[in-house]
Amino acid sequence: MQDKKPLIIGLGLTGKSLVNFLSKSHDELFVVSESFKPHEIEDIEKLGMKLHLNPTIDEVLIDKVSVIYPSPGVPYDHKIMKFARERGVPISSDIELFLSLHKSKKILVTGTNGKTSSCLMIYSLFQYFYPNKRIKVLGNIGTPVLSHLNEEIDVAIVEISSFQLELLNKTEFDIGVLLNIEEDHLDRHGTKERYTQIKKKVLEYSSFNISFNNENLFNKDFINFNKVKINPKTVTFPELKFWPKHDIKNLKASISCLSFFSEHFTDTLIQVPKIIKKLEKALINFSKPEHRFENIGIVNGINYINDSKATNLHSMQNAIHSVSEIKKDGDLFLICGGDLKGQNLSLMDGEIMKSVSEVFIFGKDKHLIASQMKSYVPCTCIEDLDEAVLKVSKKAKKDDFVLLSPACSSTDMFKNYEERGDRFKKLVSFGNA
View 1: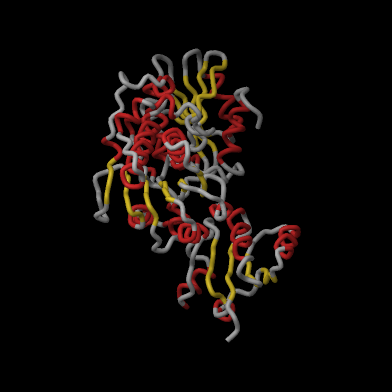
View 2 (view 1 turned 90 degrees about the vertical axis):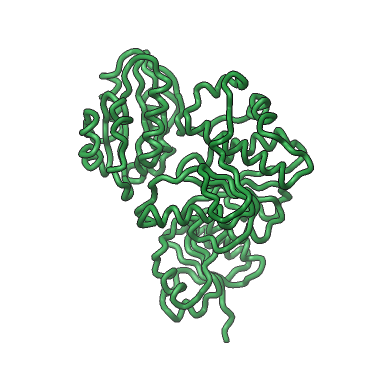
């Protein structure tokens, strides 16, 4: 029988990292990619690989494939994936390879919101309390895990999305952190139940669980991070006073992760009260990533907050609630809109929306969003973000807040949420887009 070969779908960062990894053990690869540049193919060929690019997808091809490695963005019902499941061809991922092959202690962090911020908080805490350990943050945060396969790492903190978890087969790792579950990515996963099932893999496959509720679903060592107490009288860390509640929850999850790690994997037991008392020093090098409830400043007396990363309804409502707690006087104007990606707007919290003075809505689903929001708050549909900022800046006055928190994907009008946030900052005279 002819030797079977791996098949990679996609030549983005993940796909390229898989090619580099597989080049060490294979001479030939199948690659399916909708878009690629000639120099990328030349780079692969320089590795000594024979590349079968975009072969005809049929049963004959699948019978020649040993394993399929899709990039995270590849739909679950992609034609190749259907053939593979029908014919019993394994489907794996770069995450699965890393978890199986790397010897580090591994912490996987997921949730609808807050993954990146939590990974960076965990990193800052671990660096402070374990200065002699080699700590690395990788995964969905921006660096493919296989790029670090040959590095000496003691603790790997891996941000993992639902797209990546969906591809993960039964694989053991050390700590699984589930921050929250809200309706998101229903265009990909179909139902919230399916999405929830995928997210809970991070608890099912890990040895130790850290989560936001009391469901110890898999009968393992477990921490409910919401029970961690942070007393404002004890913690004088000044930035903490301006963090929204969802970031405080992320911090509690990070603290739980550190205490859990110390209890199970080290000789030094680090207790929660001790961690909290040292927060100021432990987080001295931590700064929140851009576009996540980013207080970008005051222009003409108006406070502007860039929360472009808020790509779902729940994160938008968290942001509105947080502004309501921060502001003393003045009105709150919301800018939102984009591609809802199948979210159920009937889940909107009317009481939270009533704290907004007016909403300016742009993007693909603006009329659908307005039809639901108008019951609670005046809505104005506009063409784009530029027009939204122009109109709201004329209406807002001293001590008012303007919040960009879209509750939608950005890809109907922008390359990504970063480009959307950068545009917002430029429009209100901050940063460079």
